[in-house]
Amino acid sequence: MPTTPFTHRMTTYGADDEFLAATLPFLTEALSTPDEPPPAAIAAPDKLDLLREALGKDIKHVALIPSTDWYTGSAANAVARSADYLATHAAPGGRVHLLMEPLWNGRAGRDPRETAEWIRYEALANLLFAPFATTALCAYDTRTATPAVIEAARRAHPGTDAYEDPTHVTADLDAVPLPPPPPDAHPLTHPAAPTTTATAVRQWARARGLPVADAELFTEAITAATTTLGPVTETLLWGEAPSCVCELRTTHRVDDPLAGFVPPPTAELDPVQGLWFTRQVCAYVDIRDHPSGATVRLQYA
Picture 1: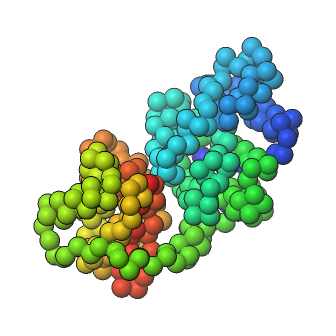
Picture 2 (picture 1 turned 135 degrees about the vertical axis):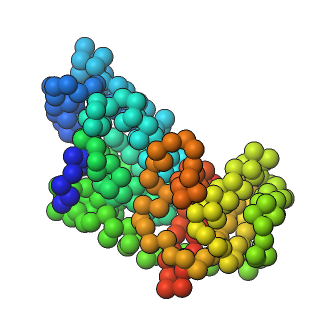
Picture 3 (picture 1 turned 90 degrees about the vertical axis):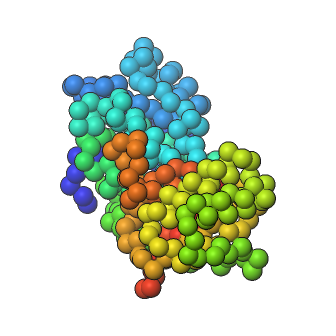
């Protein structure tokens, strides 16, 4: 179990009264912690209604945030949202209590691949937020999260008897092979000037149905990834809007489970932070290291 200021707890419940039994003591603890800002409850709207009724007048001291507003987009978007919240609302050192209810009946529970991304997010949170004295309680509803999801989440939360080092969890996720590109994947010629490659990607994306703004974002995401990864030996494009896919192959391994997840210190991106931008734009960024380099697959939506 890591010894860091960050406290990452997990609870499960299968009924509304169990939700309150698990979360009210957490919020009460937060409200009684000296010199700490109001806690935040990030949960489904119906759960927020339960908290309003149970807390009565004390609810004015709790920030209520619908989970449908928090868990939007990719897992990397949730990292950015959490980092921004700590920067703007937490006390020095990141001190704040966060009650967080993942949306397992929505996007995050849609398919095994999406589930894997959110388990990755839960595991990497232990590393990303290790320097912060934040106390988080992740509440899992067993009515929507499957037993397999619950067991996987237990591996990502210190304090459970199933907890594992985050790098072990992510290594298991990355051990799943990526499906091979389709036979009609479109290759780009290498080497090519970055501007030439960007133009080719942009034109291809528009031809595949992406609107102008989306095609531009997709192109910028690929350019950012290419800048970070170094020389790219092969680029393949396939799919139709909105699920356009780009696969980059390089002779350099990435060898970093946090690649693209660490928030940059400023809005101006350094080239080594390009994968952060890529992860913010794309729904999926899959990295597979192998002995001779790496394969990085980007899916826009």
